[in-house]
Length: 77
Image (tube, rainbow, N blue to C red; front, side, top):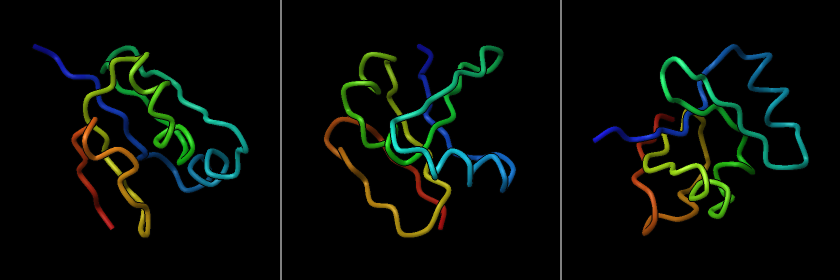
């Protein structure tokens, strides 16, 4: 069984651009079945469930787990 993973891990400029967004934003990297998104996307339970996200990799300091009962989190501060 394959899992879809939400991930925030790219260049500093891309991350800054994504983090400044005022709406949930998430893009799929088709080859790896990985989604890259901003903090609002990581907190949007409905959008994550619609895209069948099961795991969230948080690569930022100070971000809490928005829905720990619904998703598995791995955090790197």
